[in-house]
Amino acid sequence: MPIKTILIIDDSPTERHILSQLLESGGYDVRTAESGEEGIERARQIKPDLILMDVVMPGTNGYQATRALSKDDATKDIPVIMCTTKNQETDKLWGMRQGAQDYITKPVDGPALLAKIAALG
Image (cartoon, rainbow, N blue to C red; front, side, top):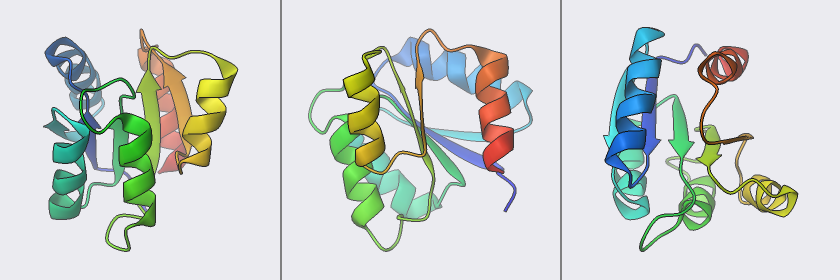
């Protein structure tokens, strides 16, 4: 299934803006959420084709939100790419164990991210 709609879950307005511009320039319909809790709710509502998930957020962090989405029948088939400053191998392994399909670190390499999204679609 081709990826059209992408939900960005990130508490940083700057990161949401940068990622939104990058993805919109790639032709994607972009939606955003400012927290893990809001992201889970928006994912259930809009059923995006892909979620870009920050890890370090107040309240429900990205690992917890990814785990919740991967266990929910309504959202378990939506691929998640973790998109975070946490760059240790253990962070990546933990993200993948929560149900993420891929893991990229910030600052995001735009062409590499677009290539990963195209490969999923």
